[in-house]
Amino acid sequence: MITPTKGIAPDRSLLAVGAQIAMQLDQPRTVSQVWTKLREWRKANGHPAPISFGWFVLALDTLYALGSVEFADDLLVRRPADVT
Image 1: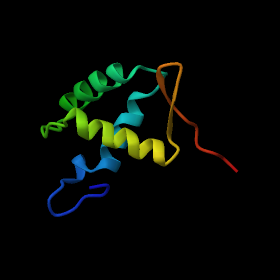
Image 2: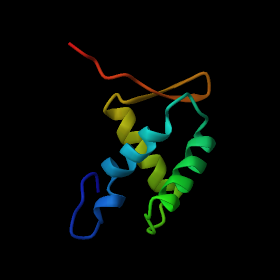
Image 3: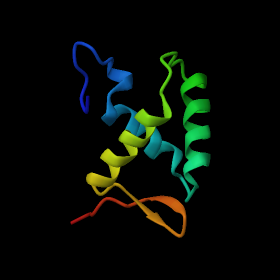
Image 4: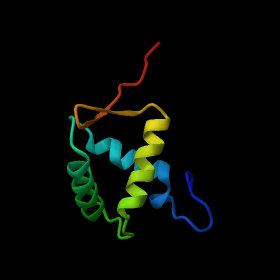
């Protein structure tokens, strides 16, 4: 589920969908804005497999668990990578 498996295509794994979500967070956005932008991006980039809202939320949960996004003032924000 998190990574591609025999039953889950690479473009539908939670890590891949999470990466696609992260690309939409070039600025803070509401959850609805990110959901809309993700669907538009997937259509424009030839990803015909639909993503349900539940799968989108699971991908967001994965990003949050990895510390890649946070929710502040009702907006999703991509956290910068720690550079050491």
